[in-house]
Amino acid sequence: MRYVMLLGMLATLLAGSSAAQAAETLPRPQGPVLLKVSGKIEQTNVDGEAHFDRQMLEALGKASFTTGSALTDKKQLFEGVSLRAVLERAGAKGSSMQASALNNYKIQIPLDDMKYEPIIAMRVDGQVLKLRDKGPLWIVYPRDAYPELQAQIYDSRWIWQLNKLHVE
Ligand SMILES: Nc1nc2c(c(=O)[nH]1)N[C@H]1C(S)=C(S)[C@@H](COP(=O)(O)O)O[C@H]1N2
Ligand SMILES: [Mo]
Image 1 (cartoon, rainbow, N blue to C red):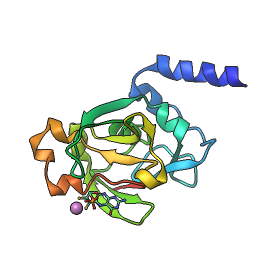
Image 2 (image 1 turned 90 degrees about the vertical axis):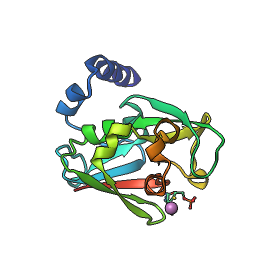
Image 3 (image 1 turned 180 degrees about the horizontal axis):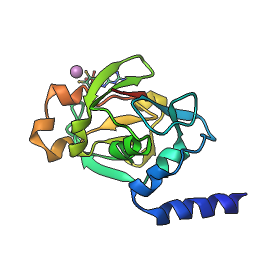
């Protein structure tokens, strides 16, 4: 069973491009669902939505950068998955999305923001994000790399405890 899973992961890696992955149907999540993507999407696996567990998110490939934030000038290493890759895997077709969090915070994010390559961080400075430290999922922008991102409008899109993306 483990062996079959490994072969599957290897095949996914070899398939390489996200276009090749997007053509495959989304498997059902095996572990706890961390993120639900709904709305204008072409890939679904549970009740007309695209649900992702940790392993499914990690299978989309790693993305990371070091940056300061609105909260701290201290630079931190954020590691996770490309937000663009998650949207592509769900076959998102909209122009915007409403991101929501476990604490019911909601914020609108234009899909045009993907040009900045924001990530869904799952680790900060090597530590897996727990609920108590803004995890398990936290949208993070490469704030230090683009002066225009050092603004309240983008800081408000750094949504922590992210659990839902509704594509519009
Ligand atoms: N889940 C969640 N994410 C959130 C918020 C929130 O209230 N809940 N506040 C947002 C806002 S408005 C900003 S400016 C940044 C930093 O918020 P803070 O200064 O309140 O920590 O996080 C954003 N992410
Ligand atoms: Mo804010």
